[in-house]
Length: 174
Image (cartoon, rainbow, N blue to C red):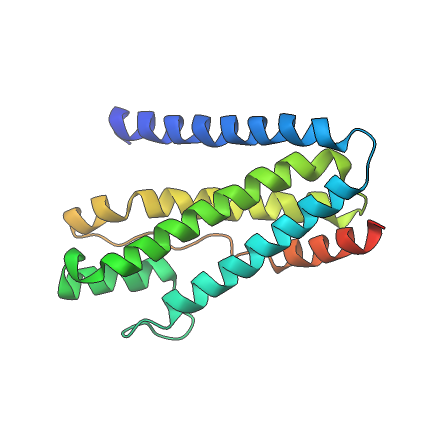
């Protein structure tokens, strides 16, 4: 791994960490005595999960994408075939998906100290592994495109357990 690529990855990780810390501090202030902020945070995360599902359906509906094919593989095949300029809307959708997932992770990290169900911590670990892996792959798509390679396989699938954990947390919050 080149020093510049490592520096870029380290900077991205620091930015995500700073966002998560900032959200955590803001969330901690509101969580002091009321259950309403907890419920609102769970609802925000559920909204982000629903938005992610919508974005994924939009990407999966692209012509040329096979059922079950990875979103970044679909994008890479399309830009190789037609050029990057022909797929600017798809790139915007994938960028929105990346931002959505980082926001979801930041909120989930902020909520962790207040989680009431035992499955939340494990679902959060799975979400963190997925988001970090997916964003590393997304950040490298154009390098791979220029080099003529392929994006690596997604190691961890999006954890369905996270949506289940949010539903359980929502049920626990009166």
